[in-house]
Amino acid sequence: MLEAKEERLSKLEKLVAGLEEKRRDLDDILEDVRRINERINELRKGVRERREEVGEELRKIESELKLLNERRDELLVEKGKVEEKLEASKVKLEELERELKDLVHKHYVAELFVRACNNAAEEVGRFVLDQVKREAASIWGRVRGGVWEVDWDKKLLPFLRSGGVEYVAEQLSGAEKVVLFVALRVSLAKRLGNPGFLIFDEPIEHLDEKNKEFLKEILLRLPEEGVKQLIVASCDEGLLEAEWDNVIRLSS
Image: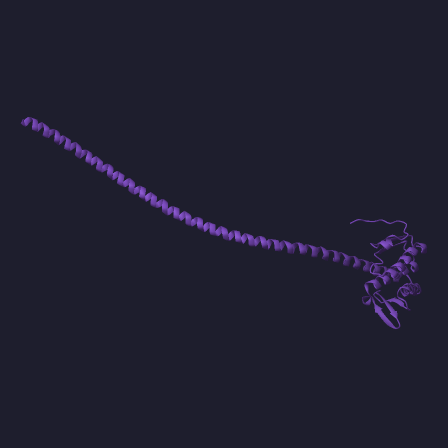
């Protein structure tokens, strides 16, 4: 009976020892689980914090992007205004270039006229020059009416005289300057030895219809008076439709 109890006690002690060992193993497992849970919580906390940081960064980026888009729209508006001003400036520049070209051309023609007068004055005497003046005054008088004298100063700049009053070229209108210029050119050609050809650029521009017809008749008679070749550049249809030997039309 005693042996049976001792055997039973021994089994119980072994069982208790086994349970104690399992309890320690379980404690170890629970400790591992606790550490894992702590790590999981730390990771979750880190993820939340990182998510908040990322969200804040995204909000900042969106705010900056909005400002940049607004600035871009402003710049596009400014660009449109600048382009409009640039186009207007280009148009104005083209107009100024055309005006400059016209002024250069007129200046060149004036220089040619002055040179021609200088050369003519050195080659001919007072008598022939008086004939030139009378011829030019006759043409001018037929256009303007009245009694006129045509003369030029020491610099060979032409002027008019009527009734004791002198009129320099600066006092004449654009049309009057054209008439005086044509009158002098024609007179020089007829009285100073015909050069064989004459060139006129828009000779009747700014004139009224009566004076246009008068100067057109003068130009048409020049070939009969010894001018071998007459070249006239004009945009006036009335002048182009006159009885010329040849008419060449140029397109722009």
